[in-house]
Image (cartoon, rainbow, N blue to C red; front, side, top):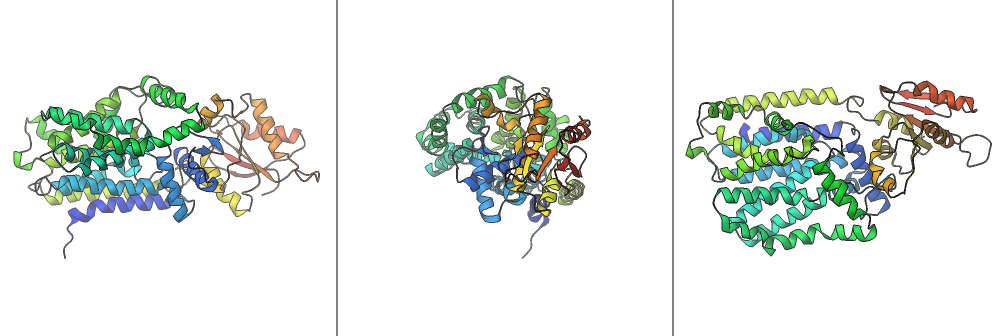
Length: 494
């Protein structure tokens, strides 16, 4: 039985992403944050309100956190378990693209899957504990199922689309509904299927969508009524209309990112379009207009708000892959396609070797390993001048003290007056000293404690000033470990 390269080459990209998910340490801040939220869910048994260091963290719905917690229940609280939902979503996305591409001409499906698998944006997101690829899989499934329903498929396809949209709503909120429905409506109008638009409002679609997506929001709002204003204003309106989330980028950001995320597969299409040529009719997919809208409409939509980040573009990449596959048809040399894919695969493998180092991955794994190796993971702990989300995850703790500045994930709790963190430097030093000098057993000696000091590249003076502050008050600190931007001190020799 033969297995041509066009079948197995895309899955080598997935296997390489799986290797990266297994080998790389958790990177700050996103992976540590999402992983710790999921770990605390599983450890505390509270799956309603996400928490981070035992503080309510409502910035994102819990859909992806539930999946990460399920992974930890099977694999334990490690990096692979946290990344498993994104990795499985990557595989599901390849299968969805392959299923949709079957209706194309010979060679179309193989090209579409290869473009999807080799996209640098999807490949990186497929090995990271973030929400974007899980959302992309939900939105892609919804678009493809609903499109079939608009063209007369059985009603179960509408129900499947509704379930996918509902779970997407639990992963990242309203965008999970808005973008797929906008793509479907625009593509239907382009095909002059105005009557089909009414089906997008049909209960067969909306009933499962609301049944899956809405109950958690109602229950969470009843448990914490202040969440409604937080979701409506900070997490929705502010993201669209302001730079509150500090991700402002120029208008050309997403068009340029789209070219980078599909390079070099758009080169034949670009060259042909410059010559005024189109793919011959027998090389086109019957849903070519859907694919074109799916590719470019998100680029336009996400270019309008002030807040931008790369993961927003992920739902457009399957559309680009299906659109560009028309230029890599059966008549194009297969060797050329396989050579391009193989070169990209080798490039990603080389990149993986370069970023395995914990410091280059912006991870605080070295500090967690040092503490665990010394049996110090339960010592009194404080983080000063910054916050590592991954440290709590690695030590399996939710009681580390934040001596300031306040972790960004605590903004909601701070607005509600539920947490306090010193803003003045003197207060931050004093709180850190208080933790390190605790004497719970009353024997006159401080209990074992450590402080992780951050931001040393920007404010190196704290490396000397804080130990001197403690020394002047009768507490000696010992340097345990230092990386480029952080240092671990303890109140007893390590």
